[in-house]
Length: 281
Image 1: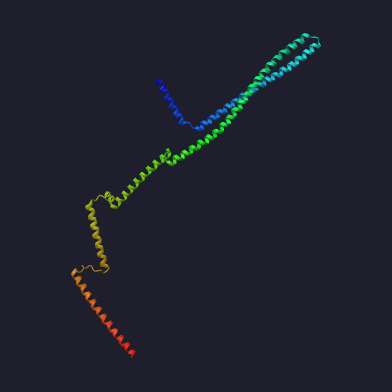
Image 2: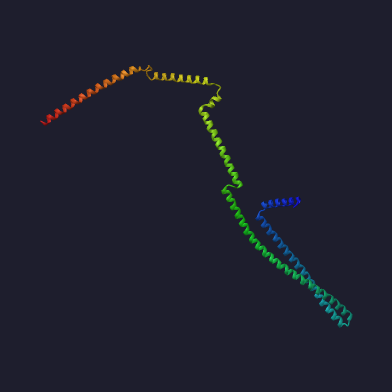
């Protein structure tokens, strides 16, 4: 195979591949059906034209037959008048008309035969068109069902072009959402740590610590003032040793009080016993 032949073959194969991908079977079937209907219409038109031509010949034949009858009558009248010459001329015209009628009959017969053949072909073509229409509709239904099933399968599996775009859009949206959430969390953290305040303030760390100390001092002063107003003592608390001695003294006093309570209970019990003895006696 030469270079030109190979190139031509490759080009034809590429074009054929492109046509196959671009071809819609339903459109092709509809187009074929319309072409067949056009052919049927042309056949019907041909039959109509042929029938019209045959009718014209039949009209001419009737007129010639009328002329033949006329020439017969002329020949009879000429014989009655002993005009053999006129009778002969009339008979000659009659003979010419008879020859024309014979030719017309032959043409009409041929046209009739052609018409019958065309009618048979027209009926056959019409039957084929009806069969093709049925098959076409069936094939279109199958193709559309297969196409719908394919689209559904692609959608379910996510391999279709549109579903691929949707999946990519979801991935981009998820990435953007994660980024926005991270930015929001970072902003909240900066706000909590006061980084924004530091960034927006012209004061350095020493100034901020000094302000904090002054604020604490003002709070302490206000607290002391509040205690004074409420009559609370601001004296210094006792030393740890004095506190311990006070605790020991309070504990001794409590023990003495408990002993006294025990003695009182014993006296009450003794009195109850005496009362019981008196009642028994």
